[in-house]
Length: 265
Image 1 (tube, helix red, strand yellow):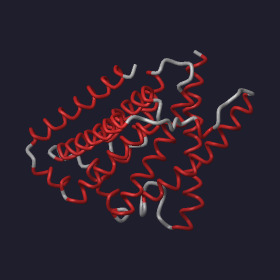
Image 2: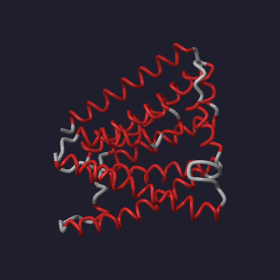
Image 3: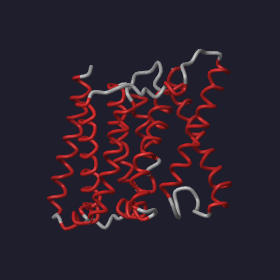
Image 4: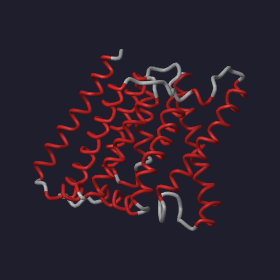
């Protein structure tokens, strides 16, 4: 039981670090920049970048302080993430899974419009229009990498020690879902699915590059689809067509994750 309390405590510790950084952004940087509270207003992508960089920096200090207080040995903070090499075949698979998530997200987004549920579509539109497309793509690469370092490299790694791996994976999936709240419940459900895949893939690959590659492929392809008009054109597809795409993509992601877990065991 002690190990489970430690898992929860580590998640809460590093979530608190992120909350502190967000509060500092809102109270110190926002009055100077005038962009709006975190996650709203202008330059949302840049806001994310600033908060994530601050979170990593403060987490490094907290990491050192924690092990000093506990009087336990620890490895270098920057080695915790696992920047180990991956095969080209594995990286290509990560890109394909990321693209499948794009199609799943896009088809669900447009399918929901048939039922007048617009939260996921509205959030995507707001995020897309918050900065220039060039800034959006650059930030999609950099911010996605930073997000995964924070959530997988730091939070998940610090929380998965001495407990069965399923529980910390479920924990990080729920945390990822919570931060998707601006996009509504459906974005949160997709966030849980993405978090579970991230967790299982990362554990098997032991490399942060696996999930970073997947996440970048997902975000860059989604916004690129929006830019060239493919995302909007999906609204013309019949309801049954969107359902088929959603089901096929979901099955592909599930099977690919299970197979990757099995073959790299």
